[in-house]
Length: 626
Image (cartoon, rainbow, N blue to C red; front, side, top):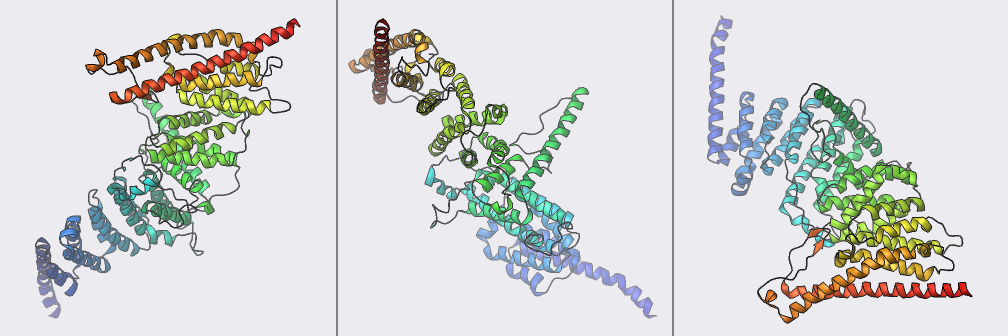
């Protein structure tokens, strides 16, 4: 009889429970609709909501109100929603609530909501100590998607101390705020499998370690590589670190807890990338055989199609942080030679040089500076130049010297340029200079290289038994490269003056330093050829250029009709081959006068060379007759 009564009342009680749950859910939604904090806390916290059947819907409704707008305008209501959500997480089913929270986390325009949900996701994951692998993977993927959606910060091209102002950039502030939230989120999971804990089973935890390592490395690719991460403790002892530096230090510290050997980690990632490219190549070849259209697989700075790959920029940024910033060096083996480390990291230097952003280029410059610091002069030979990365790096360095908008970075590149060439033996240096003279069209770079050649010749001539690499035919070949006027007598000497003046200085030095009686350099063997092919054309070009600019200056000063009517002088200014905006007419006279002074200097050098050479030639003829 009792059993029959129970059977009769059970369906009714279930219906009553369902109705009660629906009513509670309705009241909660109503409280949320009218921003009723007290009513919300009464229904969930004071009455200790325990009906698991509505937890999913309640959690979903609560997360919808965790927005930046509510935090700003309804702070008490926002905090009440957070407290109620935390209660649900503590008392509810972890797996079910995790899915509900992740569903709401997939938003890329509200950092407040994303950060508010991170703690809840973290707590639900920590309630799943066993069989957490797939849940953690999904959570990290969803959370990282928001980081990946952050826009790249603007490149303000700031100089030196001005870089501290980047901390005030709203884009940078947003990035560091999001990254700090992410690092707090992953901290307990890193701690669980940390190398600092002796009782951690590395084999059992390898999946969690691999996941955490992957997503931490991905933050180095985007967005950390775009931020100013430099910090010199000696120079900034009393200065606080910026948030970007704090983010990257914490990231590297976590990686140190996960990776016993950074070099091995980088090598493994590179092998995976190469294998993926190989498989992609095979796939492309198969599609081509089938007549299908194909596209390139990976752009180093674009997102890899294979989500499992760590992109090269992440590895480049990690190398920069280890070698240039000194972070995580305890996880970098000190068993490799400086030469090997340089050769290995040139690929990362080239990658950083590919970008236009000054902060990324500066990382490449700084990394290269540190890499060559440990290399003794004349370490690399001509055979090493067969490695294309060496010439590519030199060309990229020249490009930075010419085009980088930040003066400080350009200056660093110029200093590295000479030290980079000094790494090679004398025969290799000759080959490098010939390549520069033959391919580089920037007069300033060629002129600076000529000065370096002059310094090398001077060092050679001071030796008791001079090396012949920068003398004789090699010197002649280099001089013939640099003593050519691109358009003969019609060449624009103002544009090429940075190359012409050092060339004349070199010839003058050779005539003074190496008398015709010894002719160690061989300059006197082809002096007549220089006089005929270079000096003659240069003299004509000087006459044409002087006449043109003097006429322009005369017209300007006399106020000719063409100028009075607003016509501007025919003065074109270019930097690195790029035309600059026209200067005001009030400044053009200064440009013309400066050009005439330059022509006078060239004329003076040329006259002095001819005078010195003639005196030596006459003296030589006199000695011969005697």
